[in-house]
Amino acid sequence: MTRYIVRFDPFAGFLSLRSELFNDGALPGTTSTTDIYTNEDRELVVEAHLPKFDEENITINLAQGALVIRAERHNEDKNKKYLIRESSSSFYRSIDLPEQAETEQIDATFEGGVLRVRVPLKRMPAPTRIPISNEDAMKNGT
Image 1 (cartoon, rainbow, N blue to C red):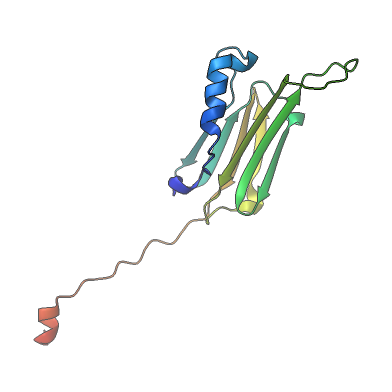
Image 2 (image 1 turned 45 degrees about the vertical axis):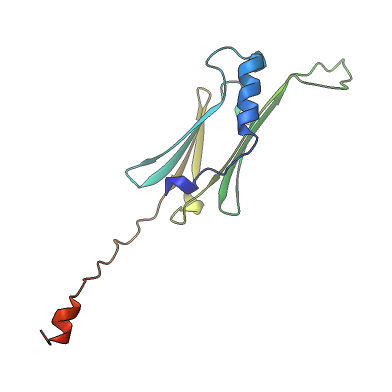
């Protein structure tokens, strides 16, 4: 199930490299990270560590079976007319949800710089075991 959760982002490596090389003005331990895990197969939990953002900077949407988390913050001086502005921070994750996700019951909290999105999962029926019969026994009528 977990191998299909995170969409491939071909530019993620470049963004990570840029962040490491130039430190993006961030202090160590203040970069945005994401953890995705399940609690006993009852719920999928997405934890986005967003220390640079406030709750009003964050949006969460459900689009085409994916959970989309965006955060954007701008450092602006109202007295300046920006031609180029590199004093902004942004975060984007798109997470494909499994088919057993209860999308109507998703809930999110933001506390201490950590966005926690809980996606309840439906109980899937146990697989039906198919017995294997011996062809020789079937030919002999036993």
